[in-house]
Image (tube, rainbow, N blue to C red; front, side, top):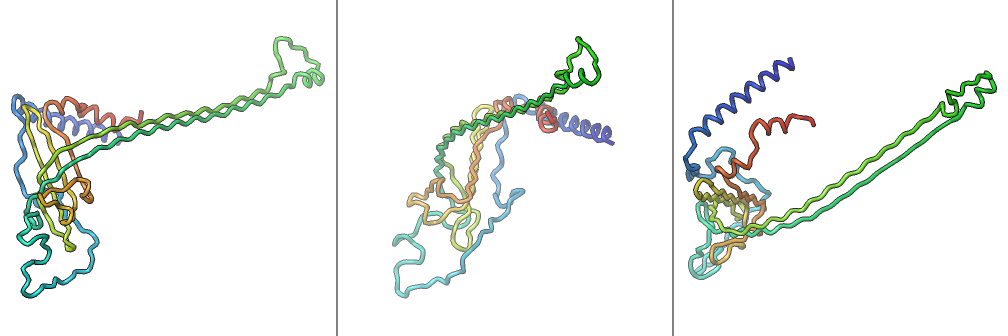
Length: 244
């Protein structure tokens, strides 16, 4: 059964590799295609955010008042606050971590017993070529050592426009923004999503990435350069299944 399963797995991988190779052959000489602009809530895998919400509060209105509830100024607030509105996210990430750990452990044990004199006195056997003094000798040893280190430094500073996709019952806003830039044969992808408070949105309709709750920020690319940097599918499969 194991042989059959392995054969089926190899056949499946071969078919997938052939399909991938055929797709790559059709893209020779062509620039990477940009994704179509789509409704984020209609994409596969999208799920509305559900968070613990406080009890709803009924709005109170003042008679003969020139101000409307929730407005920061006398005139209309131009900041994003409804589904479909756009705001600018200023992404500033500066992260650095240095960690070093080293562990060493060792143990040595030696046990020996000499019985040559006892054998000679009991049996009167003379055997110069055989030494009974070390007839029993036990040695054991354990040595273990480990070293680990992390030296990471990340820096990212850019801006991206995001769309409000959902307004939570407590007034917080769920945002999501995508940006694609193609330079020659390489596409740079930038994705940002999370939950923001309307109070954190500045008067210029911008918000810092550090004020986004449940932030999801992805910065990557696709194209010829990214493809060369990735190992082949066969190597990835072997890395996943080989135990050594």
